[in-house]
Length: 182
Ligand code: FES
Image (tube, rainbow, N blue to C red; front, side, top):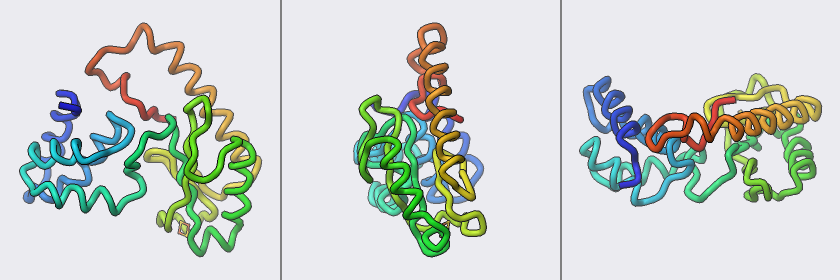
């Protein structure tokens, strides 16, 4: 089993909110992603069993969303929207700036394993374009200064988490989740 009992309990709690088990697919994928940091067919299989839906329905949903990476990523997955509104308001420049700042290309992860950069379709934050998403948080009206500040904050946050880790980590606790809130 890949999913911990904590994650399984969270999935079951969320499943109980819906009249149809199928409605719990996205919440279940979200909980699994929060624990593991990426998704794969073995996880789809476990989710399908937990919420009692066909494997293919879980796999289909997971494959549709870029917010569920299928390969290992850095601690922070920077999803920069490249769609029309963001593009018109400078998303390409923001993407180039982030690549330059982090020393990586699209799809790559920094050597310290902190940041992975991808570009994605519209995230529904068009009124505050250009924007990016990390975990559940939107960072909007991006400028170079905001990106500088965001990356600095994330680095600080990661350093704090690393310092805390030895005293707080337990095999099945939320503190071991690979995706930290920022
Ligand atoms: S076009 Fe970027 S959020 Fe919609």
